[in-house]
Length: 151
Image 1 (cartoon, one colour):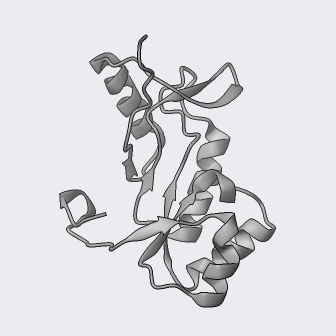
Image 2 (spheres, helix red, strand yellow):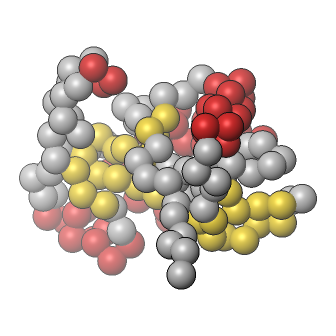
């Protein structure tokens, strides 16, 4: 992310995605990269290999978190257990920012595991911002709203 007013004019350099097929290469060869992006939900677990690898990566690199299941637009509001696990992970990674998708994907506790589009209205944007601010103290970037093209 380039330096800008939202990140205190800090240049974080260039990062790449941390994916399972690359773990061994990264840990053995230690490539020159400024940071790795992780998919938060892949590491929101209580233990095991994902966290072991993450800790090894954190010993050498900065990590930035990107999520795929915050569901900002869910009518039920944010899932409290998801937020708890996300907070635990952000404390572990010390991520300089979080990002996720502006979408919804759950109804009445049932998760679609899909990034469903939200209405393109100011009312939906305001409600989403209000809900997020009331439930989290984290800095969040929402890079791209999910979109379905009409036919």
